[in-house]
Amino acid sequence: MHRLSFTSEHRIDAPPERVFEAMTNPEGFGDWMKGFVRAERLTPGEFGVGTTFRETRKMFGKEATEHFEVTTCVPGKRLGLKVDGTKGTTGKGEYRFDYDFEPAGTGTLVRTSAVIDMPGGLFTKIMGKLMGGAFKKACDKDLDALKTYMERGR
Image 1 (tube, rainbow, N blue to C red):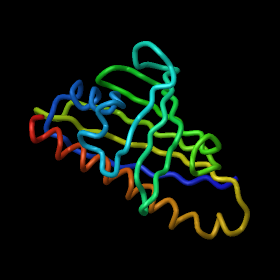
Image 2 (image 1 turned 90 degrees about the horizontal axis):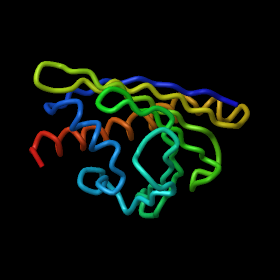
Image 3 (image 1 turned 180 degrees about the vertical axis):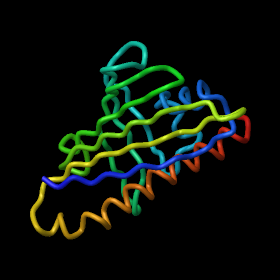
């Protein structure tokens, strides 16, 4: 198993509650997420710890679907997501994303911490830095798109 990790910060000119709401409404991801195709809730009820959903996006001209589980849910403050790669297009690995939402002036500072565990040997270890950079870039693009959407006041 090879572990990759990264952190990032994004400032969004919208209150933490609104940013959190956008990130916890899979049915609304298409309003801001690039390449979004659909989201399917797999558990009934309110969004919270234990909620599972599938998210499908178009990547490199093909649809890719991943299975998400909510591991932490403190409205307006903290969101934790786990992706089980064995249940999706990736076919392997476990991805954990923790988002902290902190008031910052009239907006929000979103702090992201990610840990990715990928099975593999020497090749995965060698490619680890490139893979970690690609995952970070993809996450940063999502938060940049969310920032643009939120700051338009939609």
